[in-house]
Image (cartoon, rainbow, N blue to C red; front, side):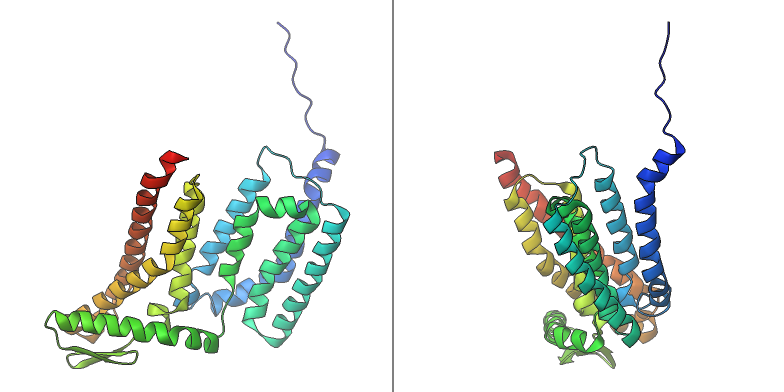
Length: 292
């Protein structure tokens, strides 16, 4: 019996297929590799931005999964290409201003603008629709300045401090608060940005968004219910974390509260948030998924 083998793809064809992607990757790394090295020693090394490398890996994986999908991409129309070039210019301007001025929010935020521009130039609006999730996740890579975090998190920290102290005081413990400072017996604890601030909410909502994307629920009502619950669940998880740290400090001392138990409380926060996401998703699916 004769068998016919498919002709192997020649080297010139392979070069023609992969050369544009390799050139794009090389250009991207030439721009951002120095920034990534710098961030790994500064911004990403801080607890409040520790989620950024993981979010970046998820972005790359999600984009790759879409790019190797069996459905072919449509080449961008001329007006889409020109619009992409305009956005590309804005992204490069943000990059160079951020790089020369050491402005992290511009250096990191330019990634979202340039990624959108490249997709629009290559695949048009249809490509943006197919790659919407990894493009949206790039917003989680933005490094926010300290003054913006302080302004955004001050009311949140006061609310969490009040909730924790009032709840533990109702249980008969000598816990009080003044602003973002919680008094636990003879100890005073400052509710820091990394514990109850904007960045912890960003990390928690990012995890919820990734779960929602993987779950791929059919009903928009289910997706909307989970999205609406992300921030409240993140706040509840933060309250649980701070309560654990206050109790550990009150019963075992300040050193215990700053030991490995501090990290364990952080893991507990994510566990509570994820369980909440699973619970809301299951309840919403029970009511709406079967009717789709």
